[in-house]
Length: 109
Length: 115
Image (tube, rainbow over all chains, first blue to last red; front, side):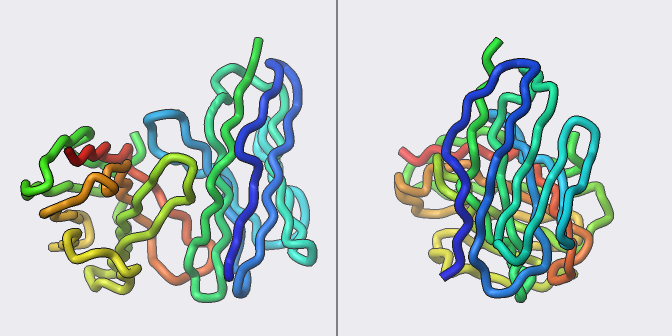
């Protein structure tokens, strides 16, 4: 079956760096997405990786290794507003999005 | 503002009621989706419409009935729901389903409670 694994919850300190991991097993691969979802709000698109390597976008970076079925989202200079759930999703060979259950990130002062 | 608007934001309904959720997108997209989000579970895709044609129905019970009159509007008609159907229902849109890199954009969601 198809599966996305990510930690349920992580805690980090304001100003620090945190890495949220995502591993996947899917039928084919057409890209990996990261979304941010604040409590009670819509998930919002953060990044898309389809080739191996690191994509940097301001304080957020996303890394992909297709051979390892692995991605991470790196958040630098953490701010309180970064407290949210982070969703990992993989598009399989049928262009279906397979979603992880999300990682709740708690930022402490 | 995500460009995808859902109403109502909150809905409480009895098991014998009939209600509808509405979604409208202002992004010029051709695909629209209904997802169910329950606590600590992955998003569950319910229905997909691509160019107004339903292309996905992921074994959703018939008490949920979608309607897509045009590429900008999507409805989810609800009748004789069960308490376990209580969840956040998310509408989303994207430029075109079934293409690589197709990024979907979500609405704020409709919180549904079935009593």
